[in-house]
Length: 189
Ligand code: 5GP
Image (cartoon, rainbow, N blue to C red; front, side):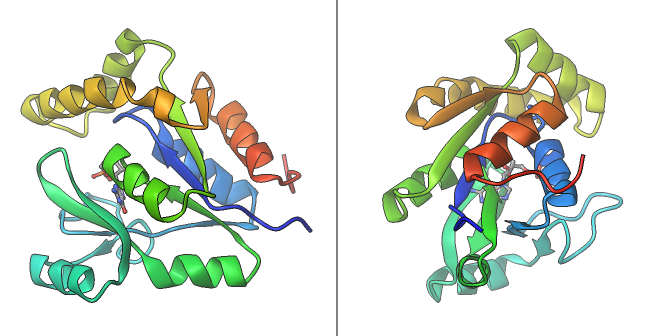
């Protein structure tokens, strides 16, 4: 079995990063999806320890100060998000392939500390389609949508900083392409 390479998956809000990452996690057990810590409250259906580790601000600050985070950022000017360092290393040591689904600021930090990682940018087929997906999922208020679209404009302009840009036309296709970039054969269809 080939050794896995750390892959950072970034891209604007509502582009489908979470869906692609979930598809990969379901179909490719050798891929290990990092669970971030966040100070934002859980949404309905989100499970602590599975989707995120939900922590308070004091805990997040302590983790930051103790060097427990590989990267961290304030996303959309609201909550803090970070990648715990130890589980990523443990996954690499166990021969699994870590996948980080994080924002642009976090991707830039990982680029500085782990330049050997593969940086993949998931792009929407068009700006109109991105807006349609964000509004269509209906999980954000109009004000939250406006903030996210502002961030998205800036993030789209950064696509060229990445090693690979994948246009997310179709979740399965993007997931398979992502895994093939990681060097893995599919284990199920
Ligand atoms: P949401 O609140 O919708 O789950 O996520 C908002 C944004 O935070 C997404 O763009 C997601 O990629 C980003 N994000 C999630 N976890 C992390 C993390 O650990 N670090 C960074 N930098 N961004 C993250």
